Image (cartoon, rainbow, N blue to C red):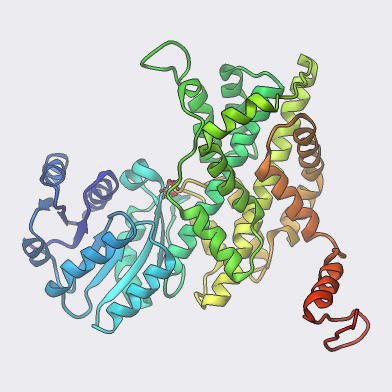
Amino acid sequence: MQYNYGMIGLGTMGCNLVLNMSDHNFSVAGYDKDMKKTENLNILGEGKNVKGFNDVATFVLSLELPRVIMLLVPAGPIVDAVVKDLKPFLGKEDIIVDCGNSHFTDTQRRIDELEKEGLHFFGLGVSGGEKGARFGPSIMPGGNVDAYKRLAPMLEAIAAKINDVPCTAYMGTGAAGHYVKMVHNGIEYAAMEMIAETYHLLKKHAGLSNEELHTVFATWNKGRLQSFLVEITATIFAEKDDVGEGMLIDKIKDTAKQKGTGAWMSQDAMATGSPIPSIDASVTARILSSMRNDRLVASNIFSDIDISITTDDKLNFIKMVEDALYSAFILTYAQGLSMLKTSSDNYKYHTDLKTVATIWRGGCIIRAAMLEDIMQAYEQEPTLKNILNSDMFIEKIKLSQASLRKIVQLGAQIGIPLPSFSASLNYFDAYKSAWLPANLIQAQRDFFGAHTYERLDKEGVFHTQW
Ligand code: 6PG
């Protein structure tokens, strides 16, 4: 039998995507070097139109022409190695679809290399973790538009749906799919960091127990903060430790790991000139958390400042933190999407931001009620540079920024680090400043390096003998 699709890499994500595809009546051949993984697929796929192979040649020959071979392997050199192994067996118009978190520059390089040989390389961002892959992820495809047309019916079938609208659509040319996924992940990093900062404030300043934290986040998840990340946070606080007494959250080491997609976004933002301080701060916060031994030494030298508040204050405090988090979430989406707009123009991806907001509403890690408003903001004004300027968000940010200001002030006063909250507020304050002290920086540059400056009252470039 000839299979509709091939999947290389049968780890949990790859295997779950295969099963998802088969639920939608696509037949899929899987390949993995690891026999245990192909056996696992054959067991889980019993009675379905899927089959695991351990030999590349047999796997490739089992596929319908022109072939569509999806990869779910770790990003980096492994993708190149798999492409190299596959190439001798491929023919014109075959498509290799990279579903991993590859760096967009690698994707662009692979597209260019394979194009010369009449093959398509296609970058596909997939978000939603294991469950998403199995039952409906958000899918961010980018690349050759004809290749996309061949993939679209399958992608639309397996993606999450919001009111019957699939959480997948064409993100643009070249490496647009992986670029959009990188921006998704940067926003994910900042949202997680800001929820963690909220946890820090509520636990250490307001003295909330895990049970209370569970209730607070579960309540927030019913309102305007409704989102996957707030929802799972509520669940996490209710999880008992299954290997000892107490709650699991208190047993987990406070050092956050990262695979790098957040840092990639910061690096590209620096390289291309997009301000995304909330995301930069969240990457740095993970790095600082990983320096646990240094932190332990320093904590013995510089003691904590402790300010507790009364129960009455607690309720108001929780309200204020909710407001601050809402404000910071808006500011983070604003930064991420503005960068996406700038980069799409730069790299000529032609990414449509309303479409991005639409497909992020379901299936992905940053899905949130707020994306509905963001989608509408772009609907009202498709060329919107920053959602902060849209009618949808002007009042919302005007009202909630006061709480963000108070929370940041409090954190500074009592020594609770709020890097992403502070960065969000600083972004807002700088963004809305008609005047910034950059005239002085220009004067300094001209003073020591004759770098010249521009004037407000005359056209041209000037230099002064200071
Ligand atoms: C998703 C996630 C996923 C990512 C993890 C881990 O959208 O499903 O973004 O792709 O791999 O979130 O990322 P870090 O290890 O960098 O935290």
